[in-house]
Image: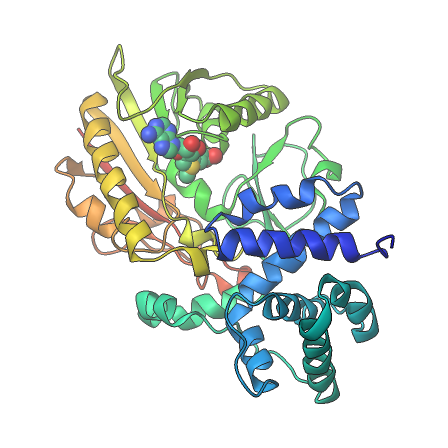
Length: 404
Ligand SMILES: C[S@@+](CC[C@H](N)C(=O)[O-])C[C@H]1O[C@@H](n2cnc3c(N)ncnc32)[C@H](O)[C@@H]1O
């Protein structure tokens, strides 16, 4: 029997959820399951469904459990399909009869009858989700007093932030929280916005723009953008007048960096290498180390991190970050500046790594930061999605600066 419209997107979303929750893949990697769908609208729907299930997983499961006598196993297909059905109805406003028609055929036999009964019971009760997603227990414990505001910020996908190549670059109308920054409501189609074709701006969360802001104007000096791809910070550094060397070990991500340079008309020397084995020919005036991390600070756009990341992943990343920072500290000219950054909310990857660096601290100053932010007493920058809430929030980053 041919698929009815809407079913291929649900099938792809189911595969994506399986990849994230069972195999520990990132949502971006798992998104490959949607790539084969011929219609862009189906690809977008599959991603939106998988993303909303991951964002609201604890609450969706509580609803499912409230309507079954015995809890379904965590990995039961009926539970997975019910999560999708509820996310479609409660988050994407799909009418219940359309949810049943498009998702239920993913099951057969007893599980199909069970899922139909549970969904019918929940729609009859007209159940609702809470105002903010409930965080998994381990995540709430890790984020401690920040957990409430972060969960509130997690309720919706984030707005769209642009960094402008110059203060007067062509850009859509929006609000500005810092020089050369524009914020648009979420949902805008990037490729159709004014200035995209001319490379007048690039997409970059306001928090992600802070590290390059802390390096100021380059005036032709040399900066190493260490772990550079896909290049948001390379573009920013080039636009600030730095002569940039962009190093990364992922050729796929470096291809995206090259495309971003081509679109914006900036230049950088590109090096494909493992930073753990590479040595520079000359020392640098500045280094920006945007270290690989658990990316828990991007939980609003990547809610898979709520379920994939635990102490094991955090410790492994922190170990790599400490080694990368120690190497980078040797590659600065005397008086040069090093900025370390991670988009992680975890102290082990931020504050603890910075504490172990023995270069001379160069504290961030309030006037270098977007309005409404302050450096920590140590002179570091610590952001989280609960900050600047009235303006639409921001990603969670940790940034520290030193001089050699
Ligand atoms: C946080 S992302 C960088 C984002 C980038 N700076 C930007 O602004 O667009 C971290 C990067 O580190 C790279 N990476 C991870 N381990 C590496 C290593 N050992 N050597 C070089 N690059 C590495 C990854 O490929 C990834 O592109």
